[in-house]
Image (cartoon, rainbow, N blue to C red):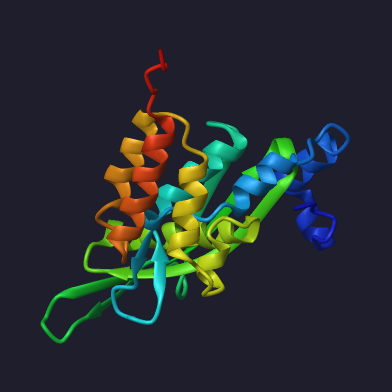
Length: 215
């Protein structure tokens, strides 16, 4: 996302400086990259929300894997900082009814892909009975939300995720039996309809299996 929309006071930061320096050499996303950003996430990436049964959540490792696939390892950066609730307190501690402490944090997460002039920010909160996990949770939520701005997992946020369409999209791009086996192992315990996955995997396996020549 280009940064000309930033207010004047924000144009002095490092991100805007790099953008101004490199705007004439920045790359445009290719059609293949745009398609990969919009490719549905595999069923293994989606799980039910722990407290809201009508919602789904995305496992962050799958969106970071997609960032690597689209932009390359080491070509994008994530920066995160904890924001104060009040004064200098970056962690809020409350006491649960069972007597255990609960830690809450608010994290500001920034994604940058300098080569393409991409810059996004997001603020997300998290709570946990472990202080470290509370801090990490805000960053994880921030990463998955930012990636939806790029199109990664957007269908989940729109409530339009189709498990069958996701399986079809991934099966179609698999070109080795080893990769097919990995996809099966990763997703067989995550799908709502195992028979659908089994059918598509079996069909693709038959297509990829070498056949003896007819003599």
